[in-house]
Length: 236
Image (cartoon, rainbow, N blue to C red):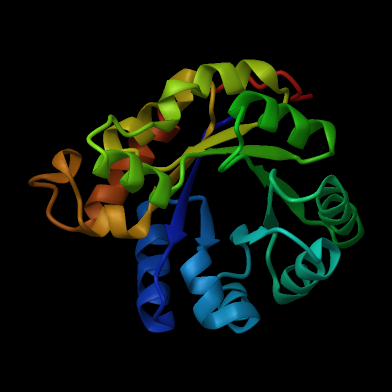
């Protein structure tokens, strides 16, 4: 599978989100994500606005669905999303409902293992229940809470190879990654590279001297797209 660069629009102001989206597309980003803060702030209206502005770009709606799975997926599909996100820690019936809605409305389902006691097993269960992709995710609050106790923060790279080996669907790693680490994820077998818009704006060492956010994103896209195909076991 050719690696994909996705930018997460974790912004609450629609004008700022649109500006970042245009910057990302100019830089060569493949997918746009209506991040959870954006979904909370703008809901279906924000997804519709993204679809109207970018009619041919895949749009991920990061709903983090925990219940009412069919309706939430249906609503976002009708608003123009091409991908929706359901949580592994929701009831299995909820995941099944999102998967069914995905089939009925032509959207891909991304299953998120955030908070699973066994992250690898959580990924397996998401695939078994029909998710098209797995998000291996270490949460913001989890990382900060652990760090506040003087312990090393967990990082998605810690178990990324195990998650990739456990499933046959494409994997994405999220949570606490630096730009350099995100760019490395295809080497772990995870072809879906996500860059948080705030991370790109508040750029770290990768972007020093790059000039601006668009330059940073363009360098990321060149690095990721230049990696070459990433083997995915279930790819036909």
